Length: 344
Image (tube, rainbow, N blue to C red):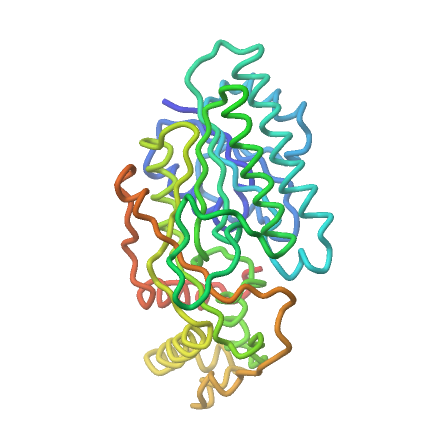
C-alpha cells in the first residue's frame, strides 16, 4: 500500500489521475493538495475516495507536515500554472508557482525523506511539458530526452527551471525522482482556456473560433487517459533520476484539428436532434457548419511552430505506448462536454 500526495489534484490532469488511481489502486491512500485557483475545482473529485487539503505548494511547512503525518511515500506533482497566453501577460505567477512551488516541494521531500526521515523508499514524480525543448522545424526529428532545452515562453521557461531543480535534487541529495515531459493533453475536466475545450464551448455557444496566425502550428496530441497510464508506468518502472517523454503520436496542424473538431460537433448534432434545443446558439443547431465560426487573429508572441514527441525511451523502459486514436479521443471529449455544458 502506498500513500500518495497529489499536488494540483483538482485541476485537469490531476483530476483524471486521482479518478484513475483510486479505481486502479483502491488500497492506496490518496491525499490531494490544491490551492483551488481559477482552474481548480474541488467538485471534480466528487465521489472519489481521497483526502482533500486546500493549500499552497509554496507552504513548505504544510507539505512537510503532510508528508510526516500521513506517511506519504510518493509525491505526484501536477500543480502548475500552464497557460502560455497567461504567462505572456503575467510571468510572475508562473515563476512563483512553477519554480518556487516546485522547489518548496523538493525541500519538504528532502527534509521528510532524507534529512529527518528513515530513508524509506520514496518517489518524487514531476509532470512537465514538451514545451521546454522549444520549437521544431518541419523536417526536424521529434523531441527526445536528450534534446537541448530551449524554452521560448515564460511558461516553458518556468517548467524548464523546475525540471532542472528536480534533477539537481536527485543528483546532489539523492532524492528519488522521475520526470515525464508530455505533449498537448486533451480530455475531460480541462478548463476552457485551452484550444480544444474552448473551441467546443464556442461551437456550442456560437462564439468565434480564434485561430492564431495562419493556423499551421503543429502539436502532438495526447489523450489524458494515455498520459495517466504513462505516469503510472513511470512510477512503477521508471529509474530514479530519469526523464521520460510521453507522447500521443498524433501530430496535427491546428487547422486540421479545428476542422476535425467542428465536423465532430456537427456530426453529434446530426446524430442527436435534441442537441439543437439544448444549444440554440450553435450553428449546428441551425444546420450550419461549426467551421463558419473560424476567425484568424494576430499570432501569439513567440509562438512555437511545431512540437513532436519521440517516446521510444518510454516504450522501451516503461512499456508505454499511446492507445487512443485522436478521432476517438476527441469524440469522447466532445461527448463529455455535451453532457456538462456549464463546466468551467
